Structure formats: structure tokens, C-alpha cells
Amino acid sequence: MGLLVFIAVFYILFSVSLYFLFPKANVEAWKGLMPVLNLIEVFKIIGKPTWKIIWFFVPIVNLFAFVSMAIDLVKSFGKYEFKWTVLSFFYAPIAFFLIAFDKETKYIWPAYAKEKEINNKLAEYTKTKNTREYKKLMLNNPFKRPIWREWVESLTFAIFAAAFIRMFLIEAYVIPTPSMEGSLDVGDYLFVSKAHYGIRTPMTIAMFPLLHNRIPFINTESYLKKPSLPYFRFKPLEQVERNKLIVFNWPAGDSIYLTSRRSYSYNQVHQNLSDYLKYDPELRAKVKNKDIIVRPVDKKDHYIKRCVAQAGDTLQIKNRELYIDGIKQKAPIHRQFKYIARRPLKISRKKLEEWGVESAYGRGMVYFLNDEQVKKIKEVSGENALEVVNNPEDPSLFPNNKKYFYSWSLDDYGPIWIPEKGVTVDLTVENLPLYRRIIDAYEHNDLKVKGNDIFINGQKANKYTFKQNYYWAMGDNRHNSEDSRSWGFVPEDHIVGKPLFIWFSTKNNNMSEGINWNRIFKSAESVSR
Image 1 (cartoon, helix red, strand yellow):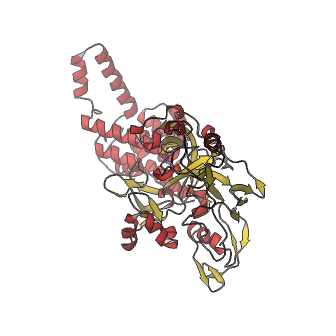
Image 2 (tube, one colour):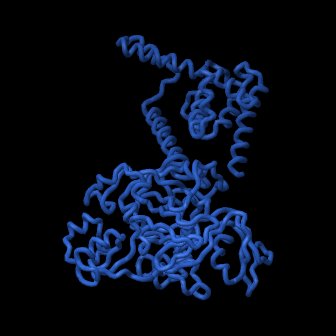
Image 3 (cartoon, one colour):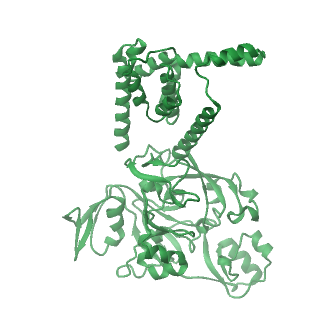
């Protein structure tokens, strides 16, 4: 709704500005208020073929078409200076109002057509090597720009185009952690489509272009929290389905501690403070100094996982196997678990590398392996060479409540129901840990608990109706993935897009170790079945 209001206000200002501007070009003022007709009249004023108005009906392209039209319109009134180009680029209605109420400013000519005519003559003189006429025309060319301005405008347009493509259509990501290892490896560079699951319009609009949430080298956030727009998503090309890969904003990443190693969720750290402090010495100083970064939804870190459950599903993990609504699910081919070698493996490092096996944490006795790798190792080293680690420790396990969920572990988890939009559930102090963050953080309610009573927005509540759909995401490296088992549900408004294909891949995200040529241009779906 907020985006629609923003667009409506902009269009009203645009139309009213044309109402006052048109008479200067001998066009009836009322035509400025008529949708489509006002664009046709602008095209006539600037001398642009009216059939090109079709580009205004193509999403994303229409933004570039509008900026180009606005710049040509101010030029038609003799406004060639750089400041007018900048103003037309960022907020054209203001430029139109200023021109309309400036008594000295008059309509000169159709700038688009005139500039095209001059450029054609210049090209002809260049081709025929008519230096004299070329210099004469350039001397009186009102559209002539200094070199610095050409560079600035070209770079601005390129950045503008790249930023919009990145923001609305396709963005490049790199896999930084081994949570999807075997399917998507550390060092895989992916293109992700933002249109497949519905283009999500930006909520944070004041930001450094082409950066996500940090500015390199100066170690600061790359955006301003205000102004901001509410969540809005266009109609998707396809729905998020079970077993499909998804890129999303880390749900727990709204309040974080950031060290050189990684981001840590404030809630997760303080629920298991001593465990987290052991892993990262930098974190201790961050906690002590309350060095907390608060991020809006679209500026939280990006994660990529497999969607293993949709809204309305009941998920359970029993002895490492995944069940949905009581039905055992087919495991991904490259699903991995943690294994310990009972004795040093008498297999060459080269052979292990051929099989895609690397020791975990640099320790040669610990491995994360898929079924095929386990089979190959046992064929060479014996059936008892490996032992799977049952229920490895995890310092943070959603819903982080040992009183009511004491028996849950990474390998035996749930059952847990995935919330669905419009569905109402009974609320009790026993099941509230499952839904607290949804009610409070994701759906923006004031939640308080007094004794055994639950209050939502000041009203005592024993039921709650969900406002959006949720998903459950897990890594294929099941014993080495921080996923929904750590921080819970993935809200629909956190979904970013669908991975398309690997466009580049380095070994362990390090060029010095080599390039994985066999992975380049592989589709994300084909490597993650």
C-alpha cells in the first residue's frame, strides 16, 4: 500500500506540473492531467515518435524511459545545464514546476529531435572528414557537453541501470559457507532471479548503489533507515515449493553483533552467551560495549538454503530423516552428515579430493560426507572406518526453550507446524516460544506475558491469526548448517529470489586454489537435486 501511495503522489505531482507547463509549449493545460494523453503531448513537445510510449508500459524499462523523457523536456525549454539534468533525473516534477513558473523561460524547440538531427550531421561530417563544418556546428551546438560531464552522466546512467537490474531482476551472490556443501559449494558464484518468487520492491530507499549492507574498507552500513517504504511484492512467476532452493534475508539478522568472522544474532548470542563467546574472541568486546547493529528487513544478510516445508506443513526430523505431514521425504542426493573416522583413513589426499572429500576444520579425523562418499570410503577402509555423529551439539536450537522443548535436537526435531496466512492458532505459554518472534518482530505487535496471561497490543489473547505465510529452510549439510533449526521460520516478506545458475566457481572461495571449471554454467537446480 505504501508503494502505491508513493507512486500515486508522484503521478499527481507530475500531472499537475504538466498542467502548468504545457501552455508554455502552446498545448492546452487540461491535457496535462489526462493519463497517457499527457505523455503523448510530451513526446510531441520533445519531438520523439509517439509510438515509443509503449516503453512506459514495460516494468523497469519504464523508469529509464521516464528519466530520458524528463531530461529531453527540460532541454526543450533551453535548460541544458548539468543541474537541470540532475534535478530531472532525481525528481522531474520539481524541475517542471520551476520552469512553468519562471516567466523568462520559454519553449525553444523539440530537443530530442533537434539533438538527433545535430548528431546525425556530426556523424556525417566525421565520415566525410569535413572538419570545417564539424567545428562550425560544434561551436554552436547547445547540446555540447564537456568531457567531465559526459563521463559523469555515462557513469551515473550505468550505475543507475545496474542498480535497478540488481534491485528488481537479477543479483549475483557467492556461497560463503559450507551449509549447502555438496550441492552448492563454498566459492560458487550464483545469479539469482528476483522475479520468479515475485519482485519485492525496496523498503530501504536511501542507500549506496550496488552495495547490500556494508561499505568496504570504512566498515559502516551502506544505507539510511529513513525514509522507508512498506513491504510490497509483485505477482510471482512461480510459488516457493518444497525442496526448491531459496535466497532470503536472514530472519534473525535484525539486531546483530558484527565481527571480522561473521554476523551474530543478538537473541541467539544472549540465549547461549558462554557458548558463542568461546568461538569468537572479537565477540566478547562487542557484547561488552553493546555494539549492536539494527537492520531493516531488506538489509539483513542473505542466506541460501533449501525450502523443506511450506506454510501449513507439519515438519518432523526423526533419526536424521525428514518427514512432512508424517510422510518421509526424499533426501537430496548430496545431503551430508558429520562423521568421525575411527582410525586414520588410508586413502590418498588426491583420491579424497576426487571424491569431493575434505577434512572438517582442518582436522583429518572429522568429515562432512554424503551417502556416496561414505560408501566409497568404507569400500576402501572397511565397514567400521566411519561413525556418524548423532545429535551434534548446537549452541542455539529454535525455539530456545528447554523447559517445553527439551528433547529436540538437530537429528530429532519437532513436530512443528509451519504458520500459514489467515490461520488462527490457540496461544498458551507452552507454545508461545514457537510464535513469539512472529507475533512480535515479523508481524509488528506489542507482545507481553504476565504470569500465564498473554497480551497482544494491550489486549489479553488466547488466539492469534497469522498475517503472512512462513517457510522452513535447511542446508543440505545437515550437521554443519545454521538454518531454521537455529532461528525458526522464514517469513514470506524475507524471500529474495530463486538461484538460477553458477556463473563462476573457485575452490574454497580462493582463486589461488584454482577454478572449478566443471561447475561453471551449471544450473543451481541440476547440482542440488
